Length: 179
Image 1 (cartoon, rainbow, N blue to C red):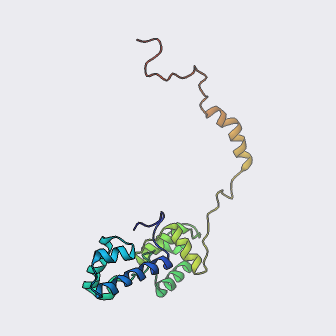
Image 2 (image 1 turned 135 degrees about the horizontal axis):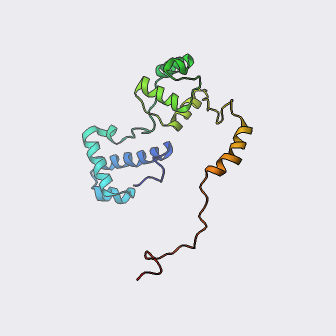
Image 3 (image 1 turned 120 degrees about the vertical axis):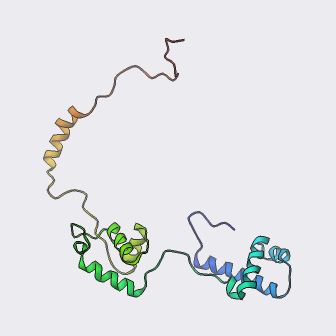
């Protein structure tokens, strides 16, 4: 069975699939054939073969759900340690200013725990534990808007290349006058 676009299963879907596998185990114990089980449970024979092999090798534990394969999780002790390090500030970790951006927190987690989070995953981790992140300002405080506007009106017009006012384009690879 293929998963929907965008990833794995929800907890409810995972539980439903586990129930199907457990129904197959009951039928394995009853001696039914793979083809009959597949038709009854409306799954492929290959899936039933795989479940039977897992059941033979590890018993009922072999067909039970292994849980969400989702993002790596930090333990409570690691989260406490991360919080202490975040409280020390970015300067203590080698950054030149005092902003904790998502990318910096992500990098810190990688350095400390050798766990890789995405930037979005880092945001979710912070949000889940009641923390926030600091987004850098887009413009410098020292910015002089009047000087920028003057530069755009005078200097940029001189620097910017003029648009060619030439002839209309030609779709052929050869020039019109050549043969």
